[in-house]
Amino acid sequence: MKSILITGASSGIGRATADTFLQAGWRVGLIARRADRLHDIAQGNARAIPLPTDVTDLDAMKEAFATFLQTAGRLDVLFNNAGTFGPSGTIDEIPLAGFDEVISVNIRGMFIAAQLAFAHMRAQDPQGGRIINNGSLSAHNPRPGSICYTTSKHAITGMTRSLSLDGRPYDIACGQIDIGNARTELVDDLNARAQAANPDAPLMPMMDVQDAARSVLHMAQMPPGANVQFMTVMATKMPYIGRG
Image 1 (tube, rainbow, N blue to C red):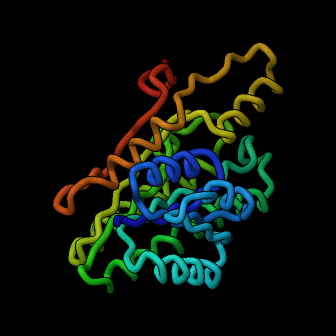
Image 2: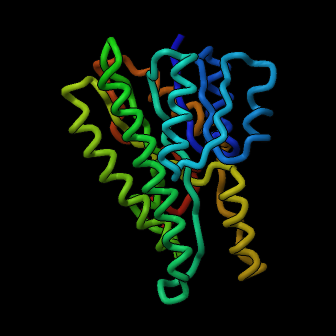
């Protein structure tokens, strides 16, 4: 049975991806801070393992990985998904504490998860595995007022490239999925912020979050000799290509 660890599994893209992998027959480790939501996902499914953990806490993450591997025995895939958007505004309007929080979750948290996964994949027999980082369209083009989030997601692209290169000798593949406007709590919040600032602002085009989850499954199911290095999946009418 294939196994995957998903960070940020309690809501949004993480939760949809967890449901998709469980339906596909995988053993799924669920990492997030909200234990009640993780237990809701796992209810009635022995292949789902709730692991309530803060991704920025190295010791807690080590314990979560160890707990999962006691049952799964092997880690085939990490979906490095946990993230936060943080405060919106121009740089002079952003409190440093808000920036620090985004960097802690979106970079430190993803680094810790990748570090632990890489170490286990390198040591397990047979060696290897796959790390899928959740980037963003903001890893390429920012939206207004998103300097914290955009900075963090550009860093994730660098992390993805470095992991891909360093993982080659150990059969560890790394790819990045850049998701644009899947219908989640985060995107609903961005729409709410935009309409609070301007009640006449149009809602952003959105796609079903299951389309993003199925894309992650496709990346995870590639054979060992192939890798989706970068994938962009987005709402068709997003103003991303050109001026929209």
